[in-house]
Length: 168
Image (cartoon, rainbow, N blue to C red):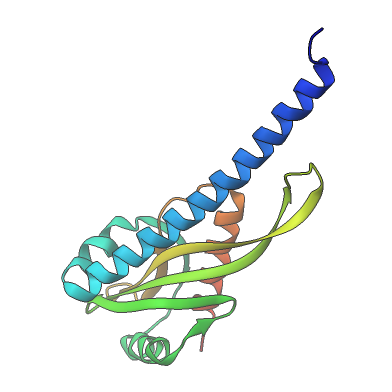
């Protein structure tokens, strides 16, 4: 007398669903930990900011006819800001005279399948690093980050970029 195949399938589905939830929790903790480590490293050695800014090599938006005075004003505004739209600013520093580095967090709801197999909205946090660059030769402001991993990340980065490039 064996175990019914339906029972085996239900057990496997329950194990897989639980494993996926545990995996998501672990990945979320790893993301948060790595962002915390990056922030601590930048606080200890500010010269690392230039290297981080250099690694952010994908442009997400730009604004032309932006003067050096506009850039200084924008950086000054950013220094006193704790949020930009839905983004919390976790850390920011100046990489050099023409680049300002921001590390941000955004909380959002993502449509997902839970352990029970039910479709539901899941609260998630994403961490993104941005560098705001001013090109004095062309009077252009641009927002750069790393390559997006999925469409959610792409849209988040584009939304942040739009928020920066439209700031007065």
